Image (cartoon, rainbow, N blue to C red; front, side):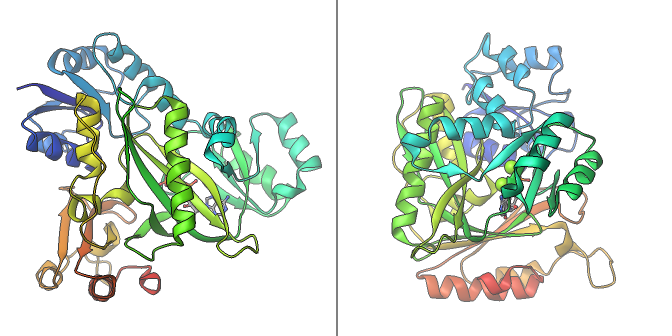
Length: 393
Ligand code: ATP
Ligand code: MG
Ligand code: MG
């Protein structure tokens, strides 16, 4: 059988490996960490740096096609692999998603077809730009200063209220390339997963509503009534338009804000995109006939991309490292026995050796016959585990 490769060995890579193996493929994971969650379950684990020429050559040798699970894999490495093997998504689109400046420029370039714009923002790379923003862009304050590259889970971003604070926070970020974004009055957040094949077939999931706590995804609602249907339709169409405009091949996740603009449902604003399956799409493993990882495998292997069908309402609860510590800061395995005695609970643990605050250790998806019972069980599970975002369930 053929072998499929993935750059990056985190939990997304692990779930990709599981999906590929189910279809009978062998897998190869390139990740420098000997204990990486995906490396531990893969047939081949190439343990080198992402840009190591020998590692990349070995991956290309082994694999029929290659994907990525980590958006900060150097785009040049994907370019190198693409000389000899199909790579999906490609280096150019991953390069856009890696850089908030390029990403926002893309959103602006396709606003006419997607029907959505991003938050008002300014690029901040030079002292002259800082001065120009301080003098002319009071409309962006209060705002959020985000590093253009490498940020995730709210890392690399700070809120700023005044022009003086902007200068101080930018200096603290080392004067690195940033965007300053206006702080918007969010009423909700959602995301859409789109899969697109090299033959331009497109499949997408209905939007899921996401609740973040401290900049990290805490709860995902994937069920009827999670958001107004008119907004859901618009978000889904916008995400597909964004993927098509990129000529994207693979699974793409587009994050949206719902902004209070005084209208009945609010206005949809595009936030950012991830060139891979996404934490907010993990519910598809247990609640849909085809998961986001199945679609990732199919897209890269040139297999058909049927429209997925969600068969159960679902809520996903993220399990961060905090869950592994008791009130006295002592490490302790959570009480899975009680959690798993609740109906419709699907526990996913990523096989990470060490729990740390904020570290994604696993997730729990709750499915059931109807939204009311799914919410009841999700609330009970969140209570048992001491999870945040309870009031949002
Ligand atoms: P991810 O882990 O999703 O990649 P990230 O670190 O790239 O996160 P963003 O998605 O840009 O960060 O922002 C994280 C969260 O901060 C958002 O989901 C939202 O809750 C809040 N946020 C970001 N930008 C804004 C804004 N302009 N106005 C209001 N809230 C915002
Ligand atoms: Mg991000
Ligand atoms: Mg985000």
